[in-house]
Image 1: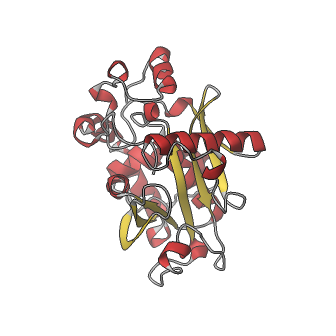
Image 2: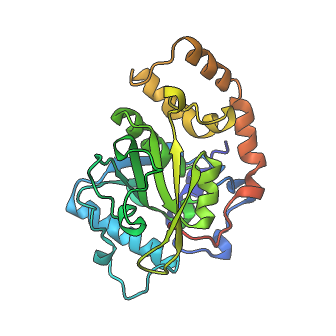
Length: 284
């Protein structure tokens, strides 16, 4: 991983719109989560106050406006989702400045998810039970941080929640561009899609990832992807006693760790081919 200077991170944090002067180096482009290491600067916190939620709504509006998904006449208050009060809303901050946000729903079997049940006319029988699923939605990252590994903090938080809640599947809906990136990190297409009811009416594809095949968290990923996206959070969960690797499972992941150097090399080698261009959108 490449570690940027403090001045470089300051440029990322200040970026509000793409300009020639703010174009990022080729080495900063990667498979959708970034080759420049900023993850260690990103703080993830659950939103717990009215003021913090207002900042989240303003960020949603800013990102969706720049993505052409809402008009300039839309207010921050109108970016609130009907189930924000029951969802877990998270913020991503760098040195006190909000740079991203996302939501998690941890539903019971009888809960109705407005983002899935509504547009699909109910919970499809082919989907895993809601009580085994976590939904990720309303993911927004400021443009300057889309070329760093800050996005890894999102999915590390999601994976941690999955383990702590004893669930196995992650569900997300995304447009085709983001869906390709999610498939790369282990999500599978369900064949279900719908037109977003507001904004630019983009078609969103529903994807699911089974993070616990054969009852083992992380076994869905090959050694390279495990090292890229899950190794850090897995090591933390093992140290906290929230995960246990024994016997054959311990041997499998000991082998996975031996691919760490190759995963780091791949992140940089693949960067120019798989990265986002500076003009891409900020939000799903």
